Image 1 (spheres, one colour):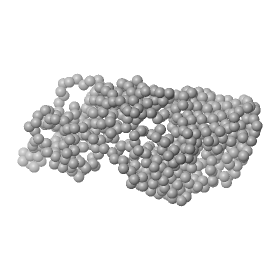
Image 2: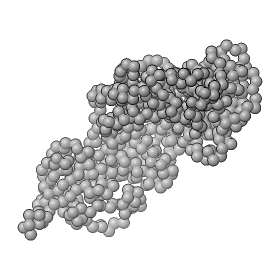
Image 3: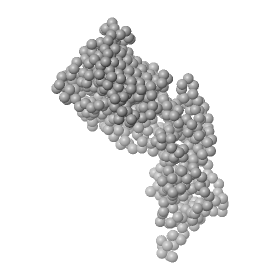
Image 4: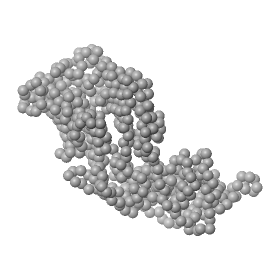
Length: 574
């Protein structure tokens, strides 16, 4: 076992250092990497108040020699490297000797450790970077690091920490990512003495998918792919979601959780076809990677970034070719009745508070704000008359749909129209609070359950229901009609939670308006979609069955009318 040594001045001068501790999550990241470097097979993390009051990380690694404990909290003291040449082929996570020293400087730190070759362990206590106690104790092999009162001596930094629930979620995200990247390790995360995430630890191929199944939305298939461009190896897991979602990417390079622009660029080059959740593991020779370019080691530089891009692009292409995932939102059955031409005017009905709030939050003046067109305010409105007739003429190359209605032509935007249909569908379901039970009940991933507990009263008003058994939260009901729209129950719950967090408990209408409009956009028919006559007529009937068919939720017109009078004028017959 190598001893911890104080770095030579010429080595430390070459290491760009900065404070690496920003939050409990960054502390947990550094301590997990220390445990992995120590060869730990089991890593336990416990939090109080999201880590703001206490963080404990315990492992069964090789431990720290008693005489080396004081050095462990000094900057630029490390067992990982000892020479300038070592910086060129770093194979460990830590190498600067900064983590424990930085943590000690901003907290009350206690380290209990026992090296396997020693009969007794050691205890080290620091406050604000000052060693207060160092003595021998009886303890178990491995290391236990306890961090209390984070930023107690830096109140300006402490005030920028999130709520306890928010910090717990950030830590949970870090732990889950490392659990996926290191499936052979046993990870346990506890919050307030309650287990919120754990893995069993094995090397079977299925382990990656088992862990991702716990943390990604349910009922969405996860694709797996590999590519081997010697010496580059890339493994990827992809959960394709519906059109309109962005690329949500987690990248590990040689075991490091990093933000990487090369892999992101490769995935993004495939556009919406590659949207969804990605977890990518890249392996390259240590000498082909520069890990010393970011103070928190959150970024890396590839020696041959072109090869990485090429390999990642090939992998994504192969996975897209093998994916059978289809995205479609079925229309409801056509409504009875026919629309008639009319000048839009206020029907004199006072909009309900909910509708006023929605209109204001979507950028309009009240429930709707219809953009002007070259034809003034002429739109089609729904009435129950059967003598009128509509005929679908076809789809223009621009994607707009052309109809003949009475003596008029109507150009319809399929995307904006479907947005309006979905928007009113969701709105009616959530307004009436109707609920649809789920069988079997869905166990919520830790990242979702922690937030759901915080907003449970709000969610229940919208039609969600929950059950808790043995500390695990289950989703037992969702707003009625969700299944009709081919939506993942947990995906919709995530959307509602995201909206709730952004508004920090503002008016309920404001909370869900953003999520409702966003979901309508994602699920709407794209203007590039080829639409057959039957579907085009169903879309027409669905649109004009809406209360406000004139515009999409964002205020864009759904259709434009060319009247017989307009045509007379265009051909100068009038």
